[in-house]
Image 1 (cartoon, one colour):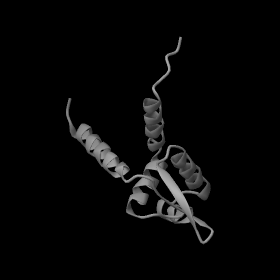
Image 2: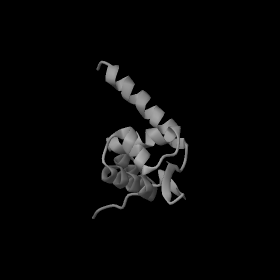
Image 3: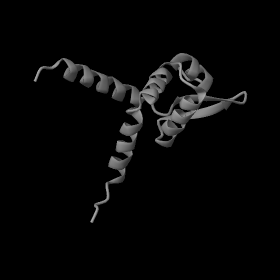
Image 4: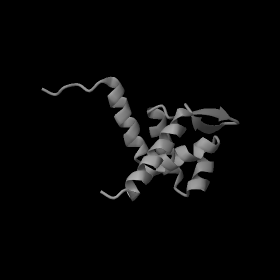
Length: 102
């Protein structure tokens, strides 16, 4: 019988899965600096509108980003700035294990 995963762990695993997508990671890093529309993100990241839109939808689904409508345009922002510290810690960890000799 399969044991059910606690809700918090399940949501954390989905969060990690989404941020494992390089496009999602780039979008979040851009939104740390300032809110942006999908077209602005397309310009900054250099991927298609469809890719950016799909990734923003996935980020919304795990409550990382939200949007507000401004002059009929969606402007995306980070729902919680705590994500900045999380990303900084991950990058410190990655740098540490990258240079560490086992």
